[in-house]
View 1: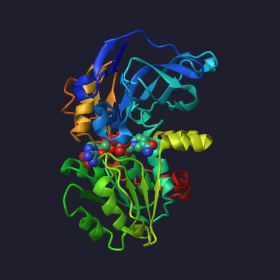
View 2: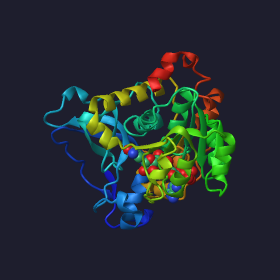
View 3: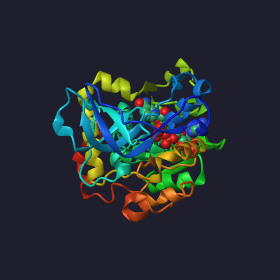
Length: 370
Ligand SMILES: NC(=O)c1ccc[n+]([C@@H]2O[C@H](COP(=O)([O-])OP(=O)(O)OC[C@H]3O[C@@H](n4cnc5c(N)ncnc54)[C@H](OP(=O)(O)O)[C@@H]3O)[C@@H](O)[C@H]2O)c1
């Protein structure tokens, strides 16, 4: 089988395609025959090594993680054999490969007919978007500032926030991304690479924002705290800039709070609820309340292109690796068809996820998200 690892830290070119035997699942594990792998930002930082900052350190050889969608091919000694043949999603290590070992305890069942892009969001990105939002305890009608809103997790968080009846201000770093952020439902899109971005947010929310969701860090986080209204809440779940800011206590005196979220910590703290989150996210995709924008589908051998796109901040939504290379967009990976995989292009109502969904007016719909 084909697998991608790296044996030194560096640029995307250190990603090495190799031919190896499929791994054997051990106790508590399954072996997945890979259909698609969602590539995540964090692995571009891990690959860069020590220069990425203290939160992005992993040992060599580098075994990229990824959001794997696949069919259970084998089970470990103590795992239910009835899982064989089922289509599942899992966050796994050594994930850029034709066959991937995953933890049987954290498999997400994939509903029938779900596209690979949507399925790739079930185990990690969807649950993170859901939980980050819930960590802020949102109330209907509040204003939510979502940073890096065009990204994999960001564009799901925008859609979930709209389901709650929030006013959403999404930030991103280019005009194309801003268009995408509004297409997935944000009321206002702001380019946070502009020096006046905080003023633009103030103009859109003169009384301050109620919630900030941030995985960028640095000065973006610092400035965001000052944008919070009284009783405002910021949820910090990453630091793409690598800058780990000190939060001045005095900032909190203005009736503000800051909390953090990490999926591993959440799974440890509340495993039953964390598993239920995966079921809820699957339901939201199956009922077309959530949509994934697939920016590009690339063959495994072009994993380096996937990392290049992410590091150049050119992607919107999801980048997939597809071992079979069956996807036609793989022919020219850097020029992903802006309409082919874009759910908002195919479905005019998808720009407002709630508009397409008659049950969205039903308060139980909000409950399912909140
Ligand atoms: N807490 C958890 O459990 C958890 C789990 C998974 C991921 N995360 C974090 O969540 C965030 C989103 O993850 P994702 O995989 O969905 O990534 P992503 O949003 O698809 O990609 C990262 C985005 O960050 C933005 N960004 C801002 N400053 C950047 C910089 N200096 N360098 C590069 N990118 C920058 C870019 O968007 P613009 O070009 O629009 O700025 C980029 O597209 C990441 O920070 C990740 O580490 C946290």
